[in-house]
Length: 354
Ligand code: NAD
Ligand code: TYD
Image (tube, rainbow, N blue to C red; front, side, top):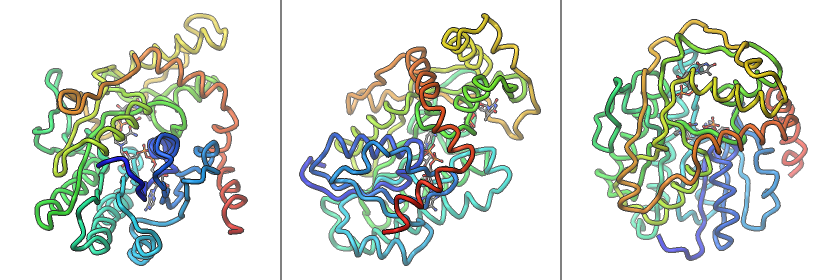
């Protein structure tokens, strides 16, 4: 897509990755109107976007992607050129506790959004784009060797990954059936600022700050491939503007860590930053019962994105992790708000009087 003026709906823009994508698009492309469509579940927090909320090309719309009438009204209100779809339930542990919520949001919500966009754009697909943001978890679990490529067969193993795999299939089905203009990317684990402290890295940072136990599942031998969230946002920007319709792109950091090594590295960084004795934070590590069906290893081969579109990650992990720790140490109020639910009050103050 060329960089003329456009109206882009970003779903899930108040979440972790979505807020970085919204910030990047609002600030880099003043000629675009960016509409952040978010239901503000527990994971959505408008405080993540405080710095850009007054930008003239930014609009927030509260709405639920599973609500057909609300999505139709959105497409009637705005002449939408593109959708970047990030809204989802995203936490594996929550999907084990409440799988049907994941079916509702991730499967039904995506199918609903696709259908509303298809009907709104009917006969005029030229210049339109539906960009679906997905995860490497759809590919299942690797052994000790090998990588996920774009050709790897889907083999999801958690209710979260099964729901994301299903949404990916709907996206490709719309491409093949209706020639609906789609593009998709599957990314590895992200880390960085504004990450809700129920996921591994922000949870460990928060617990280290508060000298609480650091719960490592099983033996801590599971491997994840970590990517700095701003690098994911830059990949989404690249794919949105230069990717080929009907294609999918894997996004990853070529950066594999066992959970236990990662937690030790975090402890070391934080001992230094908090002026603690070496080993003080690591003494908080506590092995707990493993996650059921815990995928052993994820590792992304992101060479297609590099070769075809020239994207590569900008940061080394140690540098990104140190930056992330600095952000959490400087933003203890943010952590307090999201852990106490105070941000909901912020939303009411900002938006309920409109
Ligand atoms: P998140 O949980 O932090 O944010 C999700 C956002 O979606 C929240 O703002 C929430 O309010 C909103 N939302 C949830 N249900 C909604 C609904 N029914 N209608 C409208 N909005 C709704 O998630 P995240 O970690 O930022 O992930 C964003 C996307 O990226 C997801 O699709 C996820 O599958 C994908 N992804 C995440 C990672 C990761 O490491 N976090 C990696 C690869 C892909
Ligand atoms: P998580 O951040 O939930 O991401 P995902 O499950 O989508 O990869 O977890 C990352 C890894 O860390 C995963 O192997 C599970 C593990 N983990 C722990 O060991 N302890 C924790 O408290 C959490 C939240 C995760």
